[in-house]
Image (cartoon, rainbow, N blue to C red; front, side, top):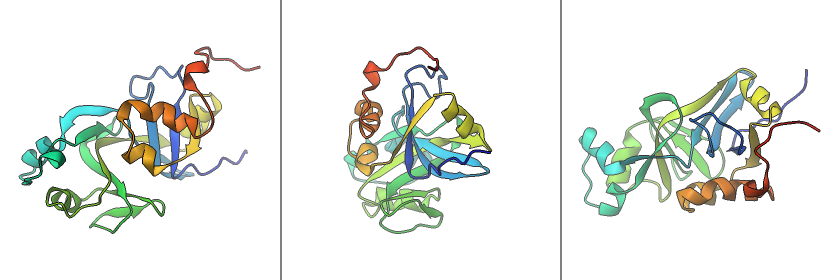
Length: 187
């Protein structure tokens, strides 16, 4: 049995030939990876909804138009009715997982109230749904060359325009995705 690295706090960068409509040309931030499986949030697939719409649905008020206009993302195909907030690791809310020294994941609504009031983290990404892999599934997909992995960089998640994140994550490895072949094969 081969030993695979723990990909927690890494990016999964979809290879150009990955045809799955949920993951084509995506970057997924891996929040947890164990022998039982992996869980992550896609960071470059806007939902076409803004945070103001989420706040309205949850009866949360905000007076800041910039906060209201913040994009909401499709975090993955699983549990699209559940919200996830990737954010700067500045403090904890009711249900916060510290992933690295820089990044946390919160699933409780108290963080949304604080964001609305301007008391939340200075950097955050709100997503509905998540990406998940069962035991051995991610390792198998890695072996099939579906993904590249790279240590995560918070600036890719929080600072770059959405359309730049896929290539920027690959650039962390020195890879230009535009120069990779769409053909699958092994030498």
